[in-house]
Image 1 (cartoon, rainbow, N blue to C red):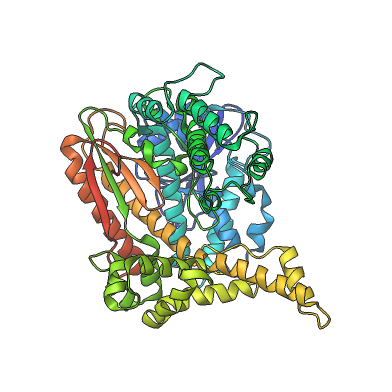
Image 2: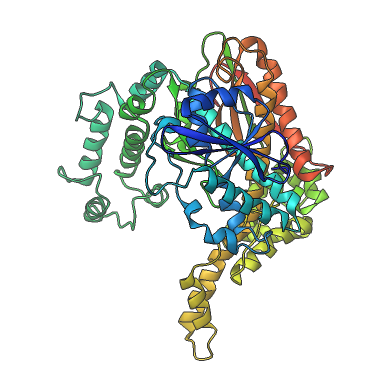
Length: 562
């Protein structure tokens, strides 16, 4: 977010079928307002394509506009920015924001997909969206940012978060191009032909029969964890859980069919025919994205399971005739982010123009690529035992600046403190129960068991803060990547009137991967835009630091990674 200037507009709902539109001056103060019919707001959006709209929530205001074919270029999403600024340690006094608890609620139209712009009765527990409430919260946020010694970071973060909100609405509206025929063929091959309602597919039934035969228990309940455990114990398989890793440690005739059964049932329930009918009634998959849905700033999904799309279904993600998919993912994003945010030129050198883990091996820090990966993940996620714990000291010797960043973040967490990302998103503080446990353990008469429990809980929090600084900064880079690419794609030639779906557009995003749906003749230009946007995002966050974000970019008919 930059300082308000001419072209800023704020919008709020009156509740009588009209909305209010305010014009703001360079300080964010109101210099005029108009009341117009709610339906006329679409014309306002279209007439001022360069305006930055200040509103309660992008889903509420932008989704119905986009359905009507009206694109908004920029916004300031008060709900998302409130959550950032309310908790950021870069804001010296957060009491004013924290007292505005009404902004901690849900958007009026988070998941229902209803026409929120024209709905006159949003839920009672929704965030406020009247113009006076919008302007009051915007003023609070401007004061919070202006009071920060790192105001530039917060402006960049709130702008990126708000741009991400626009991208999420646009991707939901555009949808992921999907072939139901290919999806059905994948399910049929894996599970058998589609069964009648209430029945199990043929292969699932056959696997269930094999499991029961191996258990010697024709009536074994396979979908109740406690009952299945009892059946396994009676068959002589003394496991504590039915997890894949524990079952694979045992040799027993039931293991193979049981694991196959669990995989089949997981596919059937998570992405089977019922899921396809609900989420892909036509030729588009439209998941509900939740920007900032994870405390680190990563996105979540409140519908459709977009963030758990199994690899075997990726062939069903298929471009329309005359179109292509540009599929791009970043190699080793979080370790590269760690190199850049720590200024560790040695680690950046290991990543330059190649696989980062292979670069670590070439430097001699560890012997194999698998060890390099294991050690780096251990360093970022706090592994202290096993092979990861054994290998992490080698990384500390080879890359002391990078390891110092995550080690310090862990130390702060273990002591009950909070840490922040590069741009200022801040980790949640420990719970009151955690603080009480640490205080009790510090008493002179505390038992050894209590002190041990406190140390263990402290290390748990340290692992969270250790990863928070890296994962959160990676999420910020990804937002910058999305925002830059969105602007580049908006300049591509359109094949029809719709501002998103009739030209190359973002169709899917998952942490370090994006999919662009593009006309065939614009596919190469879209791939170039993906690369340029990644380079630009790196420069925006890290300046001239010598690090490249290595992309695997493919132009293809499907998203299959085979």
